[in-house]
Length: 274
Image (cartoon, rainbow, N blue to C red):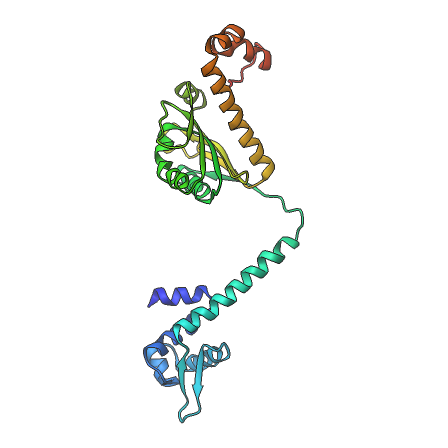
């Protein structure tokens, strides 16, 4: 019964109204006195509550002596509230965006491994068309079931995979230096762009229980999501080119792209390209 009371409160009933309606479902027609006993609430509050429920058309009174009350059927109640809720949501969908025409999607910081995992799962479940991501093997294993579900509903999956990556589905570009990058960063990057509408960028610390260095940003800002997707796509281009032109790349840029790194960052740069 406590669960029913809480659920009725979620659709706008107060505690007394919920208890009175449930009491009437148990025995009707019933007098105010009988309802008070069944609902275990003060008799004075029972009559006030019955009056409110009658005004809400949830309870019907009979012109008897004493007055008796009958609840509307549960199906009638839920159908009525469903119509009201849908009408309200449709109105809000239409008019809330008008409050501020140029709404800027926020950039939200998410901290902690569990919170990050929950947010990544949410983004995967929201995807309708495509998911681009960069992820380490051990993190992929955690999200593999959700990604497979997305793949099975015809969402295209394209991944830059670090650290001996293997997947039964989607297209994977294997990054060769996963372990080196993890040691350099002190953690594993996770980067996602879904449907050009949601993006995640961040890091999961290699140290167990290191909350301070385990965080991501999540956003629906289309400009930021565009940049995230571009980053992933360019990594895919480079991985594929490097795989197919190994000797040529080494000849032109040197081992580990040293000449290219020096050209872009400067020979004395302390920044580590990943």
